[in-house]
Image (tube, rainbow, N blue to C red; front, top):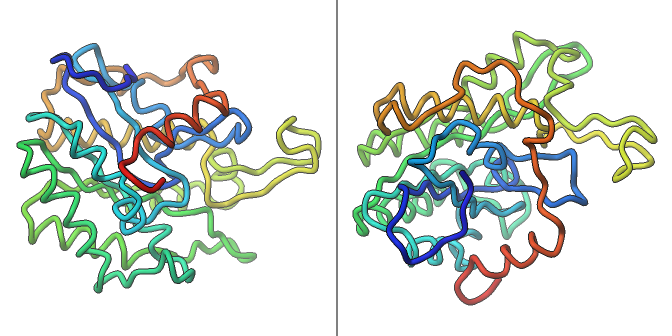
Length: 265
């Protein structure tokens, strides 16, 4: 179940913080889909998903632009905060870039400490690897240090860690260059109305990839006994109806983006 936030006590809520790997995409970006967009497929009525992820966000910019503060103002005791960063943090742009073993864990620690100070449960989730296959079919590792730094912080801070990075790397290597294409945005001209000239983006998922990643995160929450097992559903379901994957209309997406922040957007 996906939800907006109310002040009433209801089902336990799982807040999602992250970048474009997690975000709920708008209609104009379809068929791109973040795993947070389909995360609710794997939970029963005991859980509501509050997806606060923002495309292009790093751990630092998510905090600096008031998005973490908004979560911490709304999170309740016994809620969960899943934080997944590393891809944008590794980029060379000065406003995003953080060193994996420098300021990256410092900013991640804000999510952990902020949740705990409110008696909520922080969980660190490493990002998935991109479709970085080279012309020889090899899969170079693009953000390994950031996944390692997140793992090390989880040990230092005694916080649960879901290693989506290593899991996705194993998947992509097993599938190979052609097998992994259906998980990412690889569109030929006129294949989709949003991209009439075609579009190839090896960094962003389509529904098949988003569902695979969301399923693994939900499965790990149960397997690591982070949540009660009866909260999870559909973990073994092979197929989901295409109409279950919903993109926000652009106005709603923009309104949520603006609303779920404190101060600067």
